[in-house]
Image 1: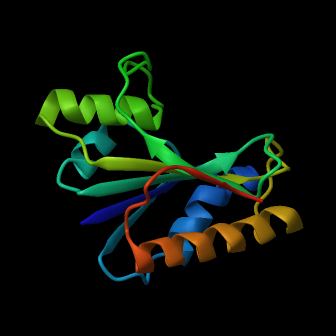
Image 2: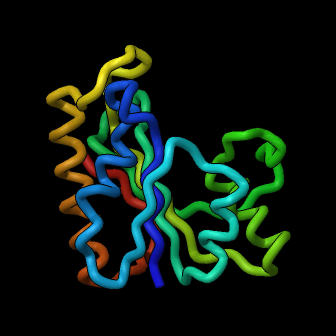
Length: 152
């Protein structure tokens, strides 16, 4: 099973790119889609039974429309906070459940963050469409890449 977790705050402009991708991917067979404001300790249980997990979030300061690559558990990330990194969620999953799924991060480049407003800027919408097309193709072809990719 593949789990997609799109996270971010749709009320903060382009920070909502992760949930926007999750909404667009809800129709993909064999992919369980979740949307949330941030990653928390509860996500460790959510991914414990998955074979693969894709964490989708907004990306700051990139020349590419999106970046996609593997991520591994890391105890160097704080697991005591109310908001966790993908690495910390994976480490917590390993600690609590004795395993972690193969994991990837899909960062979608945004430009307008912080201001209280709903909706994505035009460039973020374009980047979202490119990221969605890539992910649908990736899932249809292999479901598992050889390595991380950055796309321009």
